[in-house]
Length: 99
Length: 486
Image 1 (tube, rainbow over the protein chains, first blue to last red):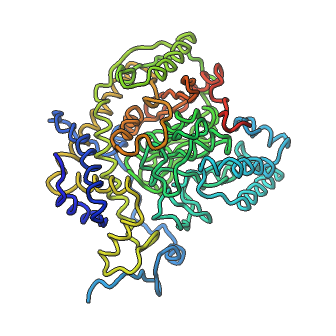
Image 2: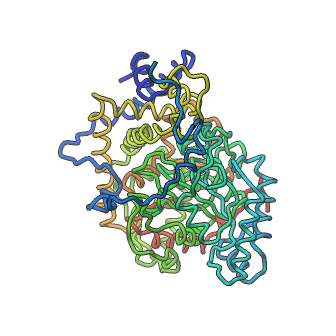
């Protein structure tokens, strides 16, 4: 199947990526080429096959290890916020959300 | 020294024939001379490297040096380094400096290695040619008109041009092995879970795996001894006893059973690539190894399966780049959603956007079962193919890539043509298996050909041993590009 301009707009909105009018056609062509590739999967009969979510599935049947629910990290707020675009008094600043 | 293996460098440092400061200075000099043409490094800080080299020399003087102490190494710019920016080849992170080191960086620093700099790569490791970097394409040292492969193309070009004796890389669908093949070096993607992903910028978390890139298999083994190991900070890190990856380097080849999937020796592979791989096979047979044809029937599904699963995981992982906590932020935004949309439009390049959009689509309501769940079922079939093959053979051998290095710009117009480069490298990460690429000759244009060995889970030591025996009988891995003479 091939994606319509409306579908592309909806996906871009979900992905929070702005697409300009000039880019739209090129984006659509690229996506439709990839979709043609992955549509090949539809033809295969996979009834009865368990989905494999993870590479560890194949060699670690017990699955992922879980650690005890304890605080193990020290407070590094200052270092971690030092790389943020805008912070004030330990809070991240963003454009106004509610009027 | 520039063409020496890590063991030779290690011996020279131990015998005090050279200091780490001198060695690091030699490689920094070569970077200064060759990097403007090849664009293999994004960031180099000579003072910082030399300070680390002085510390390594001091450590050796105190008698505390291990085998890698004082050896300079380049790092793919996907590994977070405290005190040096980590860009991931993206405008989004062009000015980002991590407040902490990746596990791999910590381990290699603890071993006493010196950081030579951060290498160029496809943006967020999404690519097979190192052309999608915000910092411009990397050139192949064997032919500057050709790509070095990707996504770890900067690391591959740095080692191939002898700007670094070794480098780190990451592999999601072939990003260590394919560039290794296209630049005539050796590279290993370990079993999933062997090398911690902590501090490695995430692309597709169920596939991403860090690994070493170097001239030869023996060097890969030395690097693995430092890089691998359990890390509680990565929930997929495998908890198992430490192993010596060099322990089987001298194991005999007699009795080795090599499997040859008919799908890897098929139409669509350049005849010269197949010829070089067959020559290597003849040598293995002459050493007492046996070869048997087998089939991996789901191979043709691997590329489409990968291009559902990897974008799906990427769309989720890259949602963290929202302009709030780190990275680029668009200016003069009307509201929060406008800020997200414009930050991501400005910060990401075309290929990264394409994969996020594909991933968003295949995970969206009404399409999840048809694409994502279907791809996960087919992933199981691909893993099952390998399990059946390894009942009959010890290793699977074939070409790493269907062609040698291709011209810059020749595949950038059609994403699917670019994706098909990875047809032989995508299956191993889908199954979680280890695989490596080593050089096995050249085509008529003088471009390197790589062959891939895929092994069963945790078979790295055996695979490295097999590759090492081959490299003791050949010198492909010691050839230096004409364009970058020693």
